[in-house]
Image 1 (tube, helix red, strand yellow):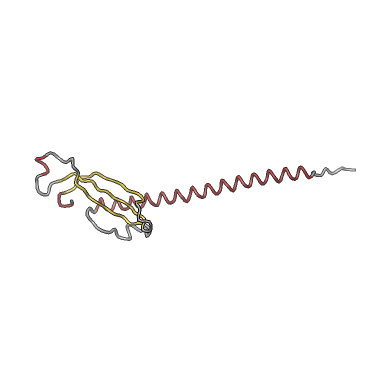
Image 2: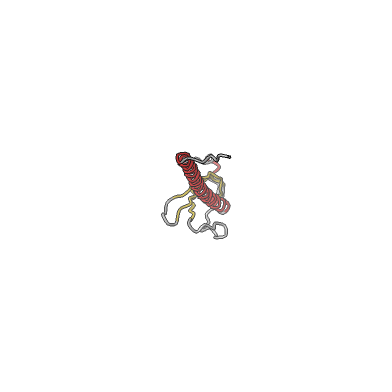
Length: 132
């Protein structure tokens, strides 16, 4: 006669414990990965909104609102401020009408709900006097 070996109760409990630990660790890793993916997507969205606003304002200095086709983010809005730099070209150069000046373009992307700055960038550039 062939004897069939059966599992004891203690072996079944140990196996279930190991299985439970493995599943809980896997679930924790999956949850962490999901949260990191969601946060990475949000950071990418914020950075992309800033890049869209910066590109628009650097190509169209002094323009007001950005067209919705260029800046398709409903939860954000952008602001731009152009300031003439204190350190400018030598004295004889910047006194010419319509001449080029050093300027700083400050672009901010703000949250519509919370009204706080999400991302911002400051770009030093050369602009015509008329653009300032």
